[in-house]
Amino acid sequence: MDYQHLALTIESKIAMVEINAPPANTLSTKCITELRTVVKDLASMQDIQGIIITGAGRFFVAGADIKEFVPALGDEQKGLAMSEAGQSLCNEIEALQKPVIAAINGPALGGGMELAMACHFRIASEKAVFGLPELKLGLIPSFGGTQRLSRMTSTATALDLILTSKQITSDKAQALDIIQVVVPSEELLSTALTVAKSFVDGKSMTSVKRAIECVIKGNNETLEDGLARESKHFGELFLTADAKEGVEAFIEKRTPKFKHL
Image 1: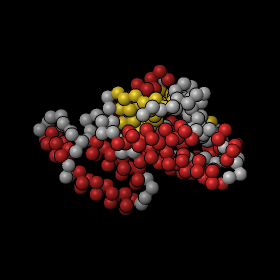
Image 2: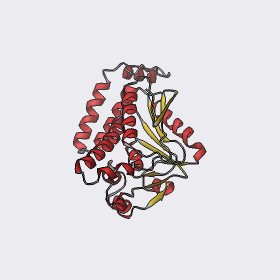
Image 3: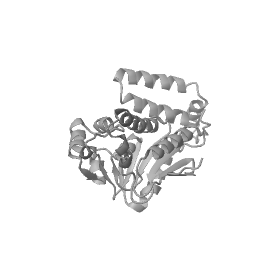
Image 4: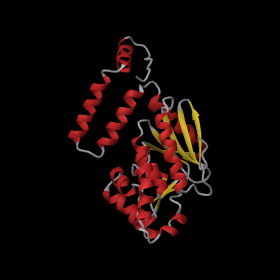
C-alpha cells in the first residue's frame, strides 16, 4: 500500500514505520487512519517479528492536528470521535503481539507522547522533549495519556505533568520511567534496531507474543487473573513444536531452530 503520511521499510524482519507529515508530524485524521492500517497489516505479516515507530525530520510527533479541532468545536460527538480514533490507534499498538519500539527522534508532545507510551519500549534521542500541553487549549490528553502515564509513573507524577503542561527532557523522562534508553541522535535508529533484534533473535514468536500479552493485559487486571493467564499460556506452549525444539536444543547444547509454531 502507498502511504501519504508514512514511510515503511523492512530490515532483518524488523519493520520501520516513519511518520512523515511535515512540518511537525501531527496526527491528523488521515495520519491516524494510515497508522492504524499499517499496524493491522504488520500484525498479519508472519515474516515481520518487530516494529519500530519513529518520526521524519525534527519532530517525533508534535501532537494532534489542532486545525481539525476548529470545525469540531461545539460538537461533542466530533470531539468524542477524535478521542476514540486516537485511543484505538494506541490500543492497537499496545495490543500487538510483536515488540513495538518507539524511536523518539525529537519532540513528542500531546498525542505524540501518548503514541510513544503505547509502544512496548521507548528509546529517545538526547534532543527529544516530552509533554502533555492539552490543558493550555482548554482540553485534556485524550489518546490514553491520563491513564497510561499514571500507570507508567505514579498518580502524582501524572498530575504534575498534565496539570503544569510542562515539557521535560529525555533524561528526566528516563528518570521517571517514561522512556528506557537515551542515546545521541545519530545512534537512535541503530540502537532501536539492535534492541528490536534482541527481543526476537533466537526466540520463538509463539512465546514472544504470549509474553507480551501476559505483561500488557496483566497491567490492567488483578494479580490472580494475571497469574491464571500466565499459567494458561505456559501450558499451551507445551503443545507447540517450538517448545519441544527449544527444550531439546538446550539439553543437546545446540542452537534451537524455531519454526514459530
